[in-house]
Length: 580
Image (cartoon, rainbow, N blue to C red; front, top):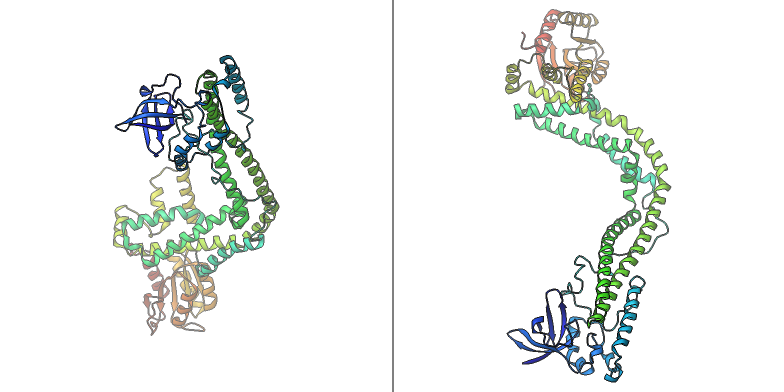
């Protein structure tokens, strides 16, 4: 059965091609079945063939078509009727209806010499148009534009990676001449420090803690201790200890963020002020997209430029061939893509420079003022943040070791490891450092030696004596000091002064009479508990309070008027339980 069709595409390298019929069927063919010796297969050529088993056989070009136009996509009106439906379906952009205005007779064909001359002139013209053709120029009527679902690699064998430009690939908003401030400087800074203020206010109770540990010095070792002790006995991490530790971690992150911004104002400027500017960030985001697009376009420019050179060389070699017209149109089409790429690159580059200038001018306008305001505000909060962290570090350390002291597993571990002394960070660190040579220590280990010296210098635990008689206060203080010269003892007869002092110092043991100058022991202990976070061991001289309070526990109860020596021995027994 003889069928008419049109060559949809043809690959000269492997001799394979596809014909589309008027019934919109696509038939594959091989150059071996090409039986027309006057015309070689090329894209857009109208042919007739025999169809057998889905393959085109005995293919010849339409003899009624003038040879001068045999390789163009121009067909006569009759052929137009055959393929009008096909073209509507696959998206041909040329209009073959114009072919009725083109009439070429055999008498009008030029001689071979004249045709060669015309071809040379056309080649020169096509070559000169490669880099000057306007990107807005409409495609010639005889150029076939293939639909998205059709393979077009055969037309661009050297440009497999070229991406076709689309108008909607990048949105270019209208240019702005300036950037409007979304959130002014004072308000942006105030919003940041409002969060800092909330963290500080939420932790005001930590200021009641008497002791302090330099968080910046001990922060690494305190978490090492926390992890090691929890591995020995998981029960050490009580809900209270975990809550205190988690809160320290939260405040530690607040400090890290705050300190980075203080040390690096540029980061503060970006995160505190610029991040709040909607218009600034929109332009900045657009500039980043432009950079990405420019990168892609530069790659495409290089690929298309190389392909253009190859196509030009092929066109020069095939100046006398029947494929010349098609190859020339391919070259023009490819040149159009190249011009589009170059044009888009120039437009995007100009836009990018314009946006960068806007961003730079906006930053320059507000940067110095921001630095001044931020530095002033940061000074107000730095001391409070560090003071709270030092208090938190102290209380976490104290609570951690308080639980460790009642853990059988920890006691067994320390005994097995021959660790002597009170169970605390200083003792634990000393045990570790005793196994090291300070002269051969690394920089990190040297910091641990410095930490130990720091702990020795600040870790003073006091024995607080509060009684009604000045004479008894002096006797108790003197006797306790004589029993062990390393003890730090402080005595008071004024209850209010005693509590104020305890708020600023670490009280290990509280020696207290049941009846004081202005109040009794029960009231004193309630006030002490409300103002001092760390609970001391309590030696009560006299009668035990009538009410049982969970706020405090009486460790040792002595008779009223107990001798100073008995009080001193009780203190020693509490501090050194293993030695007594």
